[in-house]
Image (cartoon, rainbow, N blue to C red; front, top):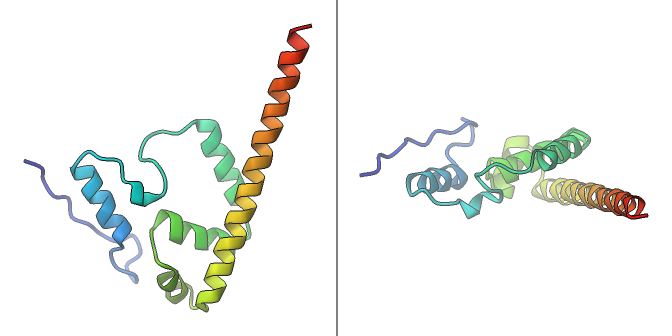
Length: 125
C-alpha cells in the first residue's frame, strides 16, 4: 500500500498549487509527472548549466515570472496577484523571458554543433 505524503506550499500566501498535488500523485504512483513541464529525472549537466546561466542573465522580473509559472506551477492570475501587477504584465514577462531563453539555448546548440563539425572536419584530414 502506498503512503500519502502531505502536500505543503513553498509559497504560503498562495497555498497549494495543482503542481504540488500532481507531483505528489506522480511520486506515489512512481510515474513521470508530465504536468510539471520538466522531467523528474537527471538531465545532462551541461544542459542544466546552460539553462541556469541563461536564467541568471534574464531581468529579475522575467526570471521570477518564469520560476513561479514553470517551477511552482502558479497560474497567470496567481502570479499577478503574488507580484501585485496586471495579468497582461505577467504574460508579457513570461513571453519575453521564455523567448530570450529559447533564442540563447538555440544559439548555444548551434555553436556547439559548429564546433563539433569543425573538430570532426579537422580530425578527418
